[in-house]
Amino acid sequence: MSRWVRVHFKGQQVFAEANDAGAPLDQGGGKVTVVYRLGGKAYTTFVSKLAVMEGHPIEEGPAAAVSSSSGGARGGKKPGRTDSDIFGGGPADLVDPDAYHLWADGACSGNPGPAGAGTVLLDGAQRTEWSTWLGQGTNNIAELVGILQGIQALPRPVTRKVVVHTDSKYCIGVLAQGWKAKANGELIAEIRQALVGLPRVVWHWVRGHEGVALNERCDELARQAISRRASRTEQLR
Image (cartoon, one colour):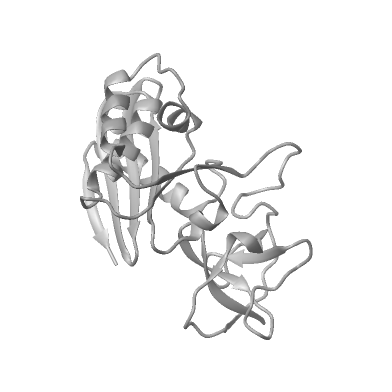
């Protein structure tokens, strides 16, 4: 059995292997083993990316064999690959419990083809999910709509930091890095307008389809919309 402590990691509550004092256990080089649930798959990440949740006891659970060295990605990391990039912030922003954390993804059966958008918005303990049917569209449109519906749902005026987690470099490029958009101009302009007045936005690119739980959830929501040919919104606690 191993000891585990609850931590914030990439806007989620996960478990980090702990030492006797209840601090994340350094496995060497500043790396720590984390699991999304006790007994589940284990990954490693840097201790600097974690924030221990105060007031939670140390828990015991089965020792976990690490299946990845990339902090939430399946398989080994290829040379030169990064797991994520952060624009407008730093690692501490990704685990900030006081920020809004918006996760978004899009899916398309063919490109163009039947399209759907999935979004998860975390506001402390409040979680809202969108599975949105878009009809015929492109993957980029679906990715953009996933972000837009989360931004539009923020209670106004927005007084807290917003962290947007996406696997779309295109979205970050046209919305945060000044890329010139060759298509989807009206949709991009609508998102830019929705971002006006937000005190601070941090953009987090995460590698898609590699086991990051909320990124995978948004992909699932987008694909559910395509299969159902219908939209739904659900609030969870």
